[in-house]
Length: 119
Image 1 (spheres, rainbow, N blue to C red):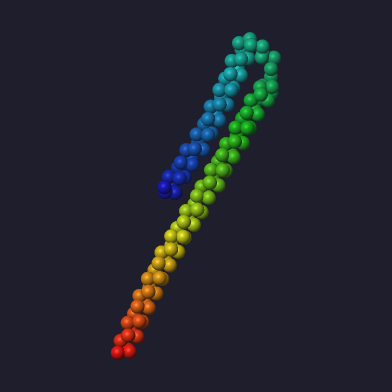
Image 2 (cartoon, rainbow, N blue to C red):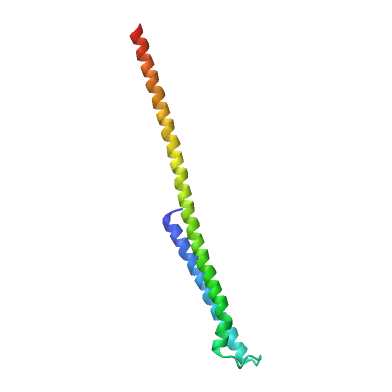
């Protein structure tokens, strides 16, 4: 996945979370004002009373959203580091194979030269 598509995916996710929070807040306000007008027994509540009621879930939602984004970022960094470790291991294995092959060829050439010099 390219860096651009990862950034676009992250931006979409953040926008989705913010949209859900905004829609939830708007729906809560609609329920608040409809409840105040329908004679449900909540007419004597002030806006501050309703904010106390709705503020806690909004704060908890925001905390979970921030925590989720943070853990996702940490996971992406961990995945990137693990990928680099795997690539380093592959490079090391390739280099060792190359050195073994060159060593074998060098020793073979040296032994051929030694046999030619003895005859």
